[in-house]
Length: 139
Image (tube, rainbow, N blue to C red; front, side):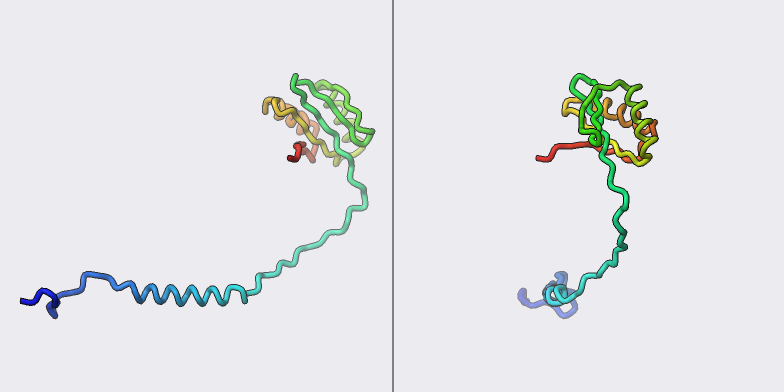
């Protein structure tokens, strides 16, 4: 009886992974060599000319901690004055009559509820303002 030898009719129950490792390493070397040689695709982006009209200074709707609204017109020197919902609507209509592409930004205090900001955005959408932004501070 020989325990060290396998019988000729028995199958091997282990997988030999050495050939797979060799193939993987060869592929890895091929990719490492060819990757820097590949040219990335060039994208030909369309170009646009500059706008002939100067950009319009935005109106700034300010929401304060006490939930009051103010309006600042940067085109008229940036003077801030308090407004109500109806006054804001009327001023926006006047501004849109002069310039239909009038941008408006909303700046709200950090402690103001999200509900107030949405209320201002709803007012702006009812007045058909196309360009609405939120003003933030950079760190």
